[in-house]
Structure formats: structure tokens, C-alpha cells
Image (cartoon, rainbow, N blue to C red; front, side, top):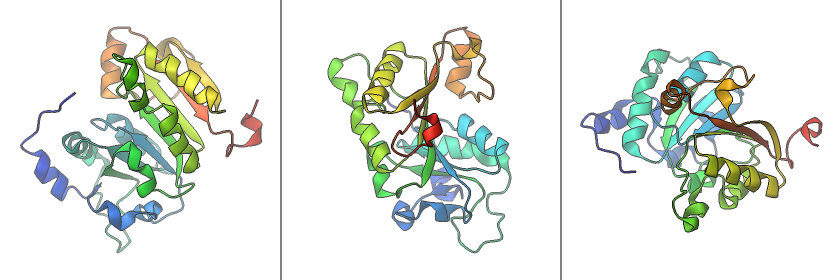
Length: 231
């Protein structure tokens, strides 16, 4: 889907202090964005930013990184985060240290160019493109084995997925299982389940208002998770 350019987006990208513009400057040292030892959770394809902004506001003990490959969408997400307070207010001299939420323009295929082993403690994938219309498009899905091996090489312990697309969801269950990941809290109708603590994206709110099912799963990397989670 092509995104229409916004007149204000370019200025937002240049001036919003939450956006990391020079990705090369933090390559291999992403935790330096925050200047503390708190765990990092990242959202791959953060959209307009509601989920990650609310998550950061609710969980001050966790650092969040919103990752988006489309600059216009990234600008909208960073703009939404303005109500979290003044991101420039910091006791540190490092210009990257701006609270517990930052954004970066990055393609999922390039995660390893920025992050080191163990940097990301949890990865969220919310309502990504299902690429379901043509069979050959399956390899573009963020839960295809080509991407899962990237998550494995980065030793990401947890991947949480939400989607409204049953084809993508069933594919993801099989894809993670085939790679030996442990699946937990699989839901075929999230909003009718007993799951507590769900934070909705803008897209999810639209589906919830129409009483359409949302699918959700938690996938745990068997090579790095606590043995208590293993079957």
C-alpha cells in the first residue's frame, strides 16, 4: 500500500528529537539510545505509533523502539508520541538519550545492521502486511522463516504477533513451530478471550468496533528462553 506524503512529515523527520536520524551512529550500540540498563522492546512496523506510545507511557521500566520503513508513517508515529512529555529533558549529555521511546527508519531485513545479540528482549509485530494474495509473496511476511532466522541470530527471546488475517496467523503458527519456537497464549478471538493488558493499535480499534476477530500469539525462542517455558 502506497502512503500519501504529508506536507509536515519532512519537518517532523528533521526536528522530532525522538527520531534517530543517523542510524549508523548507533549501529551495534542501540542501548546507548537510553543510557540505562532497562530492557528494550521493539515494534517492527510501528504504524502510526499508538501501540508503542501507550506501551512506553504505561511501562516506564522498559525502553521502546518503534521501527518503521516508511518515513511518512514514521513521522506520524513520532508526532503522536509528543504527549509523553519533553523528550529532550534528560540528565545526560548524549543527544540520543531521550526517555524510554525512540523511533528509527529501518527495514526488517536490516535489523542486524543496527542491533547486537540480545539487545531486543521482546519484538512486537502488530498487523503487518499479510502478503496473502499470491503464494510467492509468503517470503515477504515478517513471520516467514527468512525473518525468523534473523530474530534467532539476534537472540530475540520473544515475538508477540497480532493480526486480523487468518491466513497470516495460521502461516505464522506453522512457521514458528517448524523452527522450534515455543508458542503460548494463542488466541483466535483476542477481544473475547481472558487475556489481560492488551494495548490496541489504531487499526485494531477499527476491527474491535466491528466485532471482528483478532488473532494473537506469543512465540518464544527455544534456544534462549528460560527452560521453564519449554515443553
